[in-house]
Amino acid sequence: MTHLTLSDFERDALPTLTQYASIPCLSPAFDAAWSENGYIDQAMELLANWVREREFNDVEIEIHRIEGRTPLMTVTIGATNPGEGTCVLYGHMDKQPPLGDWSEGLAPYQPVRRGDRLYARGVADDGYSTFAAILALEAMEREGIGHSRCVVLIEASEESGSPDLDAYLDLLKAQLGRVELMICLDSGALTYDRLWVTTSLRGVINIELTVSVLEYGQHSGSASGVIPSSFRILRQLLERVEDSSTGDILIPELYGEIPEYVKDSAEEVAREFGDVLARELPALEGLKLMGSSAADRIVRRTWHPTLSVVGMAGIPDPSIAGNVLRPFTSAVLSFRVPPNIDANKAGQAVIKALTENVPSNARVEASFLTGEGWVAPELAPWLAAALDQGSIEAFGRKPGFTGEGGSIPFLGELAKRYPEVQFVATGVLGPQSNAHAIDEMLDLPTAVGVTNAVVTILTAHAQSKES
Image (cartoon, rainbow, N blue to C red; front, side, top):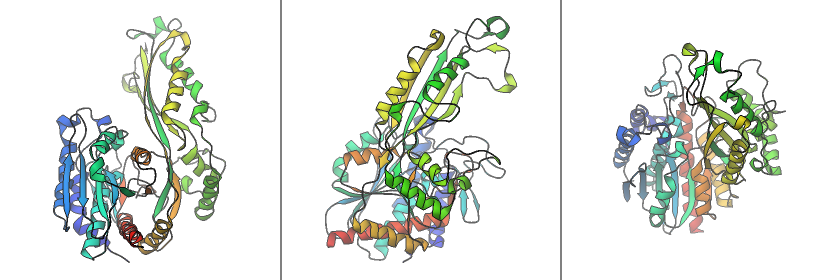
């Protein structure tokens, strides 16, 4: 059954989503002056005002603020079906930075629609989520479909690793009540032809590492050969944690046992879709990809530890690079780790490897932040049936199930607090959605399909309580 059409979404959501897209509400990790700049508050108020225009029998809209932390919005919608228990629908509205120059005709904060795709930073990750959750519930009430008590929770620090979320979960413990179902709308999709359900998420360890050798830079002609290069020492340290010839991680604490069902699922996906990751990623022609097969690449992306150097400092732009032996080199290391390991313990092991017995006795400073991975619990029969029905009705195909290589710290934290709760992690981040990269894109029909699937899931939850 179709509850919303693309025309409905264009009329009810797209104007405000487009306004949101124009606001540079960067996550605190990328805007230290976020509070003074006011963009997060501006965007949150915009979303709250849009929700206030929707029609519900019993709704309470609150923007919560804890001093020194980003705001968080809850939309509490009273049950229209008898029974206790709460469904939580999660999204976030903070954004990643632009990353670089976007393609011709596109810009991070100047939304552009091309066909059924909207281009701007944050529209797919995760600005659409407020609209999907609210429109799904509004459709249910409009059509007289019973639902349990629901809380739509929109946070503003997810792209920084959700450092503010725990404090709000403590604050809202009584308001959330007995949580029975959590729907996360911040995940990915391998294709746009069905509902994709996330079965696992890797954890993340971000390390800021600085190697220093001088109080200030020196002419390379006078210092080289005497003062060791900070970059060379950085290379040596990185070789302790990663084999540069293969990309394999060398710290045992970063590995977890890969379940057989993960490998079997990867084989099934590869049989149906072929080498979907090779097609999805914009690799240069002729590049030799990691992994021995399509299935192996799926497993590597979702359950293998990896290292990406995502930032560097102390290195001048080539246009102003002089013949100077630089005083320091800094790097930001992003480790993705398996869903089933202790990310904090793994981070401590990496720090130990990077800071003990440093070559040439150079000064090394290192700090780290972690986000835990997540493995979805077994689906209850009613939820498995609802996912099938929701995907078929919204997309015409049964759902797909796969792990994701990214992290959603919210899910790991909530799984600890509510270990018996049913989880659905889904989203719109499919091919060419470019989350965190240039030219981020929201596929509008997929957003509508996910919204309709949420209606089916919430309907099934309410009905499961009647039986």
